[in-house]
Length: 106
Image (cartoon, rainbow, N blue to C red):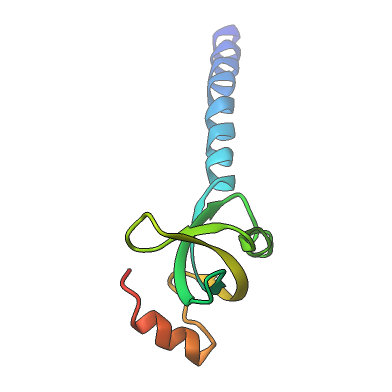
């Protein structure tokens, strides 16, 4: 009986950190968004973003003023206006965003 109790305590103590790590991974799940934005240089673009641990609303609020880089990886502009953000696998509701997305290489 003592052995069973000791074994149960050992298993419980070893599995607790694994459960905590699993919960932490779920809270930090990477979410991919595509957003239709106007940049500080007046260009309207579709840009991909990745976030974790934020709601979509929190993420969208954090975008204004964020630096984004062009395809060359050197030229950058800040987000001036956020028109629409959706998860990467969803469709935009705006026709203009859909048209820009069709011309944006991902």
